[in-house]
Image 1 (cartoon, rainbow, N blue to C red):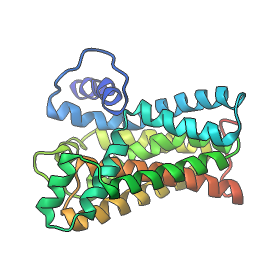
Image 2 (cartoon, one colour):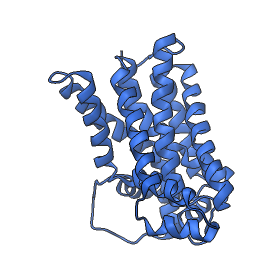
Image 3 (tube, rainbow, N blue to C red):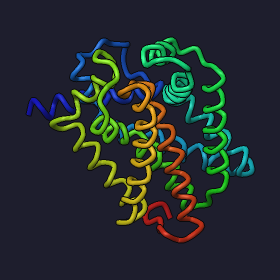
Image 4 (tube, one colour):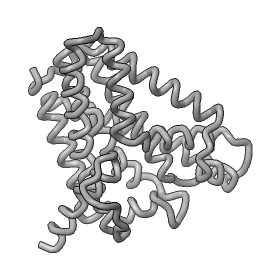
Amino acid sequence: MNVLLSQLAGLPIALEFLTLIRLRQVQQHHTRTFAQALGWYPVVGLLIGALLLALDRVLSELLPAAPVAALLVAALALISGGLHLDGIADTADGLAVQGDRARRLEVMRAGNIGPAGVTALVLLLLVQWTTLASLDDPFRSGALLLAPALARWTVVPVALVFKPARPDGLGQTIRDGLWPTAAPLATIITLAASMTLFGATGSLLVLAATAAALLTAGAATRLLRGVTGDVFGAAIEIAQAVAWLAILMTQQRDWLEPTFLT
């Protein structure tokens, strides 16, 4: 019972950490409680996706696909407070530095965006925008709802596979909170959502997002000898873009069939 209550306490923490939604005054949470909130990351992703889907339904009655897609990408950035976009910018800047590991981590911690960070952001947002603009219903609806959940779930495999770059950072906090319930809970929710929206083969979308996140974290780990909070953010953003691209590919080739939002 105590484990269940502790896990449920992580839901509002996950919501407040991953979005700008505030249910109460800002609080300092025990490290383990904060880490256990990881189990609810896919639920927060589904909530974000539901908000995007509702916005899409309204805007699509007023505007063509391209500007609607641009507004959806902007809304996604606003809902999350730019948290993961900041991660991809800082990671790109850190990896682009000509220096040792300590220098790269210092640049990432400073968070002053440079040319590499700007380039990474522009390219990522361009991919997200054009992909969303190319999706048609019911694939579009499924993509808007599912991709944010898939992306936020990828924190689990990244934390499982790669060690933290700093012993006192977010990476270590997340790794410490994976078990016994957070990682299984997040995985069950993600698989259930994928299969509900795209049938049994929807699990392939989980694999695509996972591969994107692991490749991103792996590239960073080669130079940083571990992952940081910024690397998690970068992995989430890239996994989200890849999830949308994967759904677009299935739309073009009829590899998947939406089964819920039809």
